[in-house]
Length: 475
Image 1: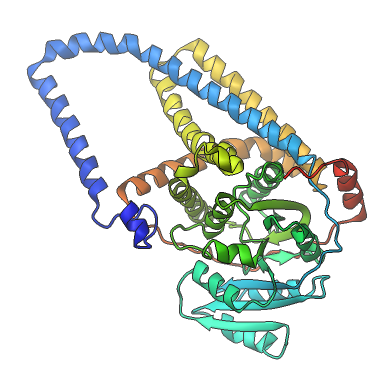
Image 2: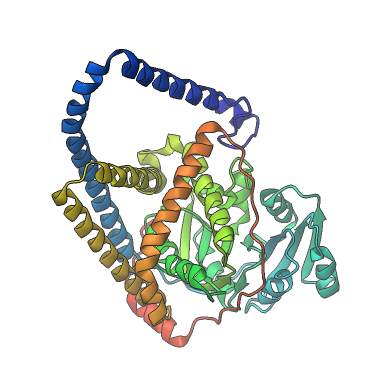
């Protein structure tokens, strides 16, 4: 692993397939052992059967207690971050340095024009745009030159296809402003988002600020589920995590970065599939701060098919494992409290180990059925769903998000269906990481059906100010 990292290869890439060989040897050894016992030692298996029946229930109970303990820790984490989100800091908007928006684009002919126009419509004077065409095979470059070729505020760069991280690094190298607004090519930002994000950089310790990303194409059950997830998990939790400088990722959909901080960390790395998460964790490792601005809105185009959703989330899950491996040395490091004591344990224990333990425990309960244990798990699951609903409503209060009856009705099925799909993707990612299979980017097809979000209303601003006016800057 260390050798592959030194050579600049992607984390978990193992061309020699040593892990496949090891796994094959272990499976063959287990199969031969069972065959030997069944053919030559039937009496041993007869007695072993009753021994296993006795130990099986004890194992199930142990699994359930581990699951309940980890779930309790997870619930405590959720409430901690939700309460911290109430104290989100309001910034003075008098700080307004020059900002360069960098937009990498690969086969984005359906969305790129609307994205650039939404940036140019921002209520911010010192703003220019760099669009980097990463070797698109469609009409992206042609459309860009036709629409913005004569606009002095827009610079169009083109290069051979080399991935999103290389396109971002090229755009950063040509950026003139000290602050960088990095956007996906399907993102539509609100007019006041740039101003709200830039205000945080009056503090020299802030390296990046995440905006409030929402699903802009809610038209079926899959996108409705993602809307619920974005409101509750992405925005509410990130709001609270930023309070402890433990924000997992400043997303590519909407984030503002300090150029000097990016260059100090070596730019966007190609070691992982999640270049934004990778760099966000690198900033925390090097002592910078990352923050969250709940009123800087953007709408992104979420996958609206099951195939597109699974492709996107598998990439996210696999990249999370890659970042866990890359920054494992920071685990429980007291000198980096946000990353080492909060974020890394959260990713490793609650977002990786807990779903795996939950799945194994569920299968074990089916094999060794016990009425009391099943009732205990059913009650705990019902409590967790109730907590999810409470947090969803709380997220509405914090961000001022309008929530419909359909959103509320989607919480329960989203919790069940999403849980199954995400656990499957986690198991798949663990297997791929173990055998060293190279995972490609698998870009989701754009349809150009996202809307442009409005800016914050006066009611949202007043509500947010009232909730957070007493927060002290604890850095």
